[in-house]
Image (cartoon, rainbow, N blue to C red; front, side, top):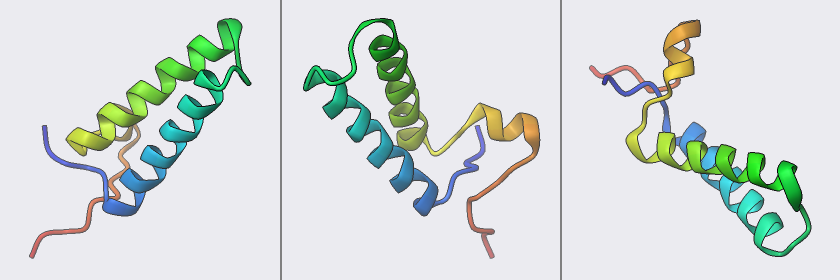
Length: 68
């Protein structure tokens, strides 16, 4: 897997994942919506840790800075 996520993109995804987790575990978002958002947060966190987003590959997007 070739990295296709830049540091700003990873930071935003991590912040969103943390916000969703706080909402879920604070019982602000519950039920099916809460579970769906929690799964989305897990995907955001995982893709941030590995610096690779499969969806970016499908649409041809790359936010990782070019290596010189």
